[in-house]
Image (spheres, rainbow, N blue to C red):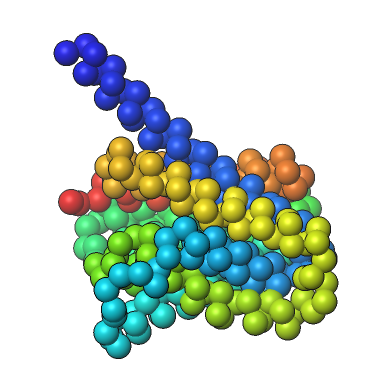
Length: 289
């Protein structure tokens, strides 16, 4: 019995550690992407990231193998990929105007609202009110702190809306094919949207070897590595525990932004972001089965 308990504890620790590393990898990838903005801009960065991710996932999963899809199924897969591309475009463009932690926190409103859509409980509306208060508090002045960019907030909210749609289409795609094939096809169609826009936006600068190498690092840190680590976590923990831990991602983004990008948040902004995190944690922890 003790050995079984010890083994179970080690499994949970491995799952939690893999998920934390996944979140750190994702936010470090976003920090690297911000460094690319100065050279090629966020649109070209998004295009290169999607292109490299599609290439790697295609070689890894070989999505052309498997049962043929019907026209209706292809439509769902294409929409899944286009929403993924739109989410990345909006989020990376929001990073041009917002600190990393705040952009991640605002983007989280998408899946948060999706979780509340079918709710009628008073407690869930309490979490919603806390989230709204957190959003409003992000842009309040604090001892001369300049207000946040309205364009950046709109882009982050749009990324959140795309994230909610990505979850819905992802569920449908998951019923049609294995996860690896779905991810590879989704990245391919995301690249068909973002890569031409990236080439048009970045021009000849995207052919620079340092730019290509850094873009490849971004694709790995923001795609292949966190995806693989999340698969390790999902196999070893419940979906509810997974969702609760993922709610901490804005805090990880803020820490990475502070350490890697020297982005400092005001006390009020940190308090507002904490309110958003608590709202997400509370909504997930008290959700019905």
